[in-house]
Each structure stands twice: as structure tokens, then as C-alpha cells.
Length: 387
Image (cartoon, rainbow, N blue to C red; front, side, top):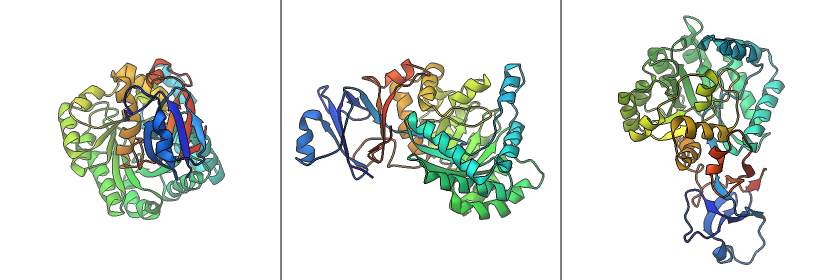
């Protein structure tokens, strides 16, 4: 938790210092203390010596909050991807090949994989990463995945937020009994949220409800994969249970959108998944028009979205969803924070954690304008320059 002055910024997302003046972000003890005009900086901090980062007329935004990833896994599914290129349809059961590889991997291999992917996230401007289990599908393997997340958290500057996703599939008739009666008691202490994949080939609405209610009894925040492969009722369940987020939502309906808005459920949209699957994109504008808070996330996983890049996701959101640059950056920062029910990240108001990104350009529109290119000049986490 460091002190830092980020000076001479052309603009700071969400903050207007007035008159088109250059701005400075003051970070004290790892927290944003103020955003002030550059000309008034010394009045704000006094005459003491502060470490400085010169933004050199570039734009500054909050660190990205990636609210949906599956960073803990082993192996790859390149052959499955190649088969889809040849016309094979994606099926949720493909997860099982990753389960086999993850179970076979050692603890150290799982930890190093998470750390390596988190480093790539951080280099792309992501300072907070939600990380799901779900490639274990047994009590021992699910706990081992969450233990790997815990241990990896001490080896990366990015913040890792663990989610239990033992209900990634229901491969056996009595599997949900196992999740509720054995997995959750063994795993809950290592997670902050409980997720369920409610869709064709995965869990039914009734199964997802049972898992999420059981997770809530252990103090875990409920969230849900919903309406990705077809409309099955997962979004309505999210509204009924007051989930923190409903994720994917490709097949969300108008009544679903209204219910999500009324319940305060954040819609976590994953355009890189649609891109990888060559499938339809979620109706982002429908959700926004209904008053739903929208978040953007990578869905980084080995089967359907093997990317760690939030800038790429923002580019897709602008081109495929029709979001403007402000909407996309807000969804990738404050939206992700809302999905994680966090008020201390995703913005640069006083009191927020000192997590920010200096864009290599005068405006954050550069992110969408340069798809696939490196537009990140600097990354700051808790007041420390990590890139």
C-alpha cells in the first residue's frame, strides 16, 4: 500500500477537474486521496517528497475489474477449438476434458498456471480478478483448486477473488447432493461466492436454486451462469434469489431484463466467448435500456474464451454490442466492481483503492480503436507501479 502522485494526465475517467486542465491523482497509503488539477497539486499534497509517475498527457482510468474468469485449470482444448472451426457445435460436456487435466496436475502446477495468467491480466490493466473453481467436480479436487487460488494470491500483485463453482456440471444423478452435502462444507471457507452453471447440458433451474441457496447458508454470495446456450430460466432465478450477478445472458428476454433490473442483479457480459464460439452476442443495449448495471469480463477459460485481455473485450463490446467508449470502460471497471459487490474498486473517487491504468493515448477510446494492440502504458495497484 504505497504513496504515489500520478501527474500530468490529459483526463481521468469519471472525474472532471475543470477547464480541460491536466490532472493529478494523489494516492496515499494505497488509496486515492484526491484528483486535482495539476496546477493545484502542491496545495493538495504540501511540500513533501512523493514518488511520481508522469502520465505525459495520457488518459487515466481505474484498473479493470474482471468479474468472471476460470483461471485455475490445467491442459488446453485446442483440438476442441479446431473441431468447432470445422463446424462442431459447442457442448457444455466439453468441460470434462479440462477436469481430467486439472485433476492430474500437481498443486504447484495449478498455482503457477494461475500466477502466469494473472500476470497477463495485470499487464493488460486488470487489477482485480474473480477466479472460479469448477474444473475439479469432486470434493477433493474442488478444494484443491480453491487452495491453489489462495496460494497464488500471495504470488501476484493482482487481487484474486475466489468463487466456488462445484456446480459447473451435474455429471451424475446424485451429484447435486454431493455439492450441497459434502463440497460446500469442505470448500466454503476458501471462497466468497458460489456460482452455478444453469443451462442446456449443465444444471436445471431447480438444481441451480438448490446449490445457490445452500451456498448462501454458508455465507457465500450467489451468482449464476445463465441463458448462454439457450433460454432456460436462469436469469429469472437470479432475480428471484437476488444474485450478485447473472453472467452470459445471450438469450435473455425483455421480462428477464426487467426482473434483473428490479432485483439489482448485475449482468456480466462476455463478448469474447461469443467471438470464440462464433455465436450470437448478448443484447447489451436491451439490458442497459432496462436499467440493468452491465459489467464486462473475459471469461478466461481453456474451452470457450482463452484470453486474459480486458482491452480486447472492450473492443468487442464497442463493435459487437454497440457500446460507446465511456459505457464500455464503465462496464469493465465500475460494472465489474458492482458484480463483486465492491465499493472500493472500479472508480477513482477519494477512498478507492489506488488501482489505475495509464492508457497509451489521450483518451480511453484508444482501447477500442486499437483492437488486439497493446494500449496500456502503466498499471498501478494499491499505489505501486506494477507495469
